[in-house]
Image (cartoon, rainbow, N blue to C red):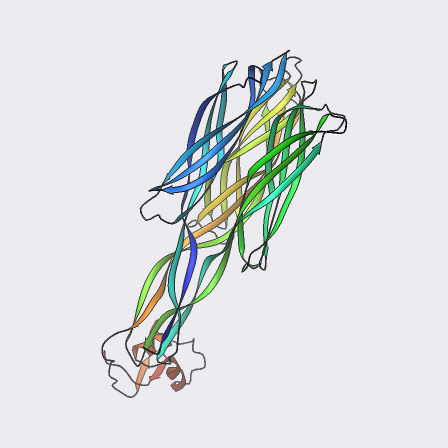
Length: 520
């Protein structure tokens, strides 16, 4: 085989090993800063958890995270006055790796499953929260296979086409956001910002040849206490962010997935021309991780032989991860929170927020069925003169589905949930909730495929030929290739001597002339 060149190629792909979730329970006591008044009653606690670092240490993946709390409370200060305080707490969580799980890639996001705050005394509060971390482990696989043989007409080659998913791009992109809000003269000037939250929605990713386009909206929700006023004033703005990134090799027929997260938020207050604090300047950074998958057809060698020398084929089996498809769906969830006798009557809604917890997912025929809970909380102004603020909470179950054609029960799914919007309104003795959620899902499966990794010449003598012509009756499962290999001839010779027009078509019972037969 000195004159034969074996052409090899590497293939890289990502395979989902497993996905699950784990909980982290956090409990800490916090002092009210000296600059803040005593706490009389806690109204609401908003928590923003995030993963800040992932590291493989030994047989574990260590996830490091941070949670930011914003506590809005009523303070006993010339009557009940709203105030707020911010706290941070770090946490860690470990994912145990199984044997053979190496070179893994971990993707993780976290949500607040439960949060509760209690007053220890007028200068100390306790916060307990349960953080749910949803994670996936992917294995980065790579192997080499024989793509072709060149340089000799002594080897007969049977080719096949395999379809695999390759990662054509994996890019981290930063989008810069900026917002300026001017408080009108119909509202009091700003005494203190009680809460500032950012919510990403209408997230999208598009690809063209050699380009990736990213875009999303960021809704800015602010609650502030007015100067010389006890009222809480809500402000809102929606900022569009976009960026075009040049990525060589991507094409419009590839499948992109993207994960967005807010990494930094810097809010500043400024005075207007009259010297009043009425300008809010907010700058923030959104980080996006984009992966682009291509479904590529690669030519490989299925079988090879030579009628001049003995050759051996080294075959390896590889479990290949396949991304079957991805899609998203929008669901509108409605629910009425019935007020109890002890609840104060609402005058108007100040703010509403929610977190989504997915409790179950199941791949079915042509769809993924999802179960979950929306944990909603509404802050409102009451008709009571003294206790003018109150809140209600509700856990709203929902069911939804994502259509993915061709999906079946044997496949795996990864589903992400995003709150697009939440609205609250007063309806009689209840508060009506309307939440819009986007569920994004992808369906994957594994398939074992055989590849030829090498072709080598073997020692030994070629079989001697016996009869010059053999009449062969085609049996079940016979192909021109199998017969040519068995009788040490070539497919071309079989086709020519039998005057076959369609080399792919062979019928059982058909008689073929075989030019020479090997003795086995």
